Image 1 (cartoon, rainbow, N blue to C red):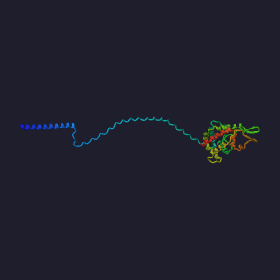
Image 2: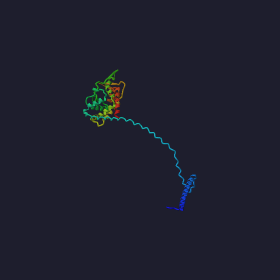
Image 3: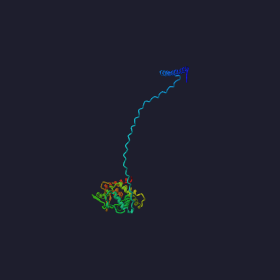
Image 4: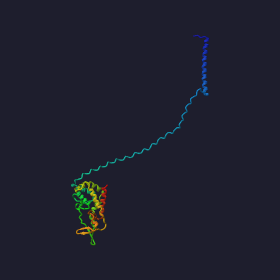
Length: 285
């Protein structure tokens, strides 16, 4: 396409104008940027204040690692305790009429090896013992009906200056009985008494007593013997034909059971009283 010279000049002028405008805009933008950095322009509107920075907390030290508490050592396990051996059931008691072997077993069990031998009667030991205790509680001594064989030696008197005295040599005939009783263990004696008590009660009821009264008779007989006085001096006797009596009326008026304690001598009497007190205390436990 052909253009004349005027058209060429008009196009060139327009191009020059566009270049001038671009140069002014570029210079104005540079000047604006320069002036903004060198001085703050006056704001036309208030600029909202920036929020104050939050105060920085001082750094907290890291917590120390907790020291683990010492773990207690486990207690050593105790070995299992063996279960207690159950007590065997007691064998049933024999009938009263067939109780002699059982009674001898009980006496041998508490005698601690002491051989009584011929000192025991051979028959009806339970019944004999019950009758003996019954009479003893009333102050009487039934020698022929007791569980022990009668003493073979006679009562001994010592004559001095025309008077008779209780002979200390006669005390010895009671030594075996007193020693046997003194060495009895009161706990073992109580246990065997309790084991035999049903048979003793049965024999006691044969005498006409009510149930449960034999133990009372036992305690009464013990108290009767414990009440016997003791004498460490020679005791004068009175001779009446073949018999002797105590010259002191206070002694002669004592019960037969208490006079028996005197005739066995003070040492033997103390031994017998010792086991009686111990047995009575064990029976009341």
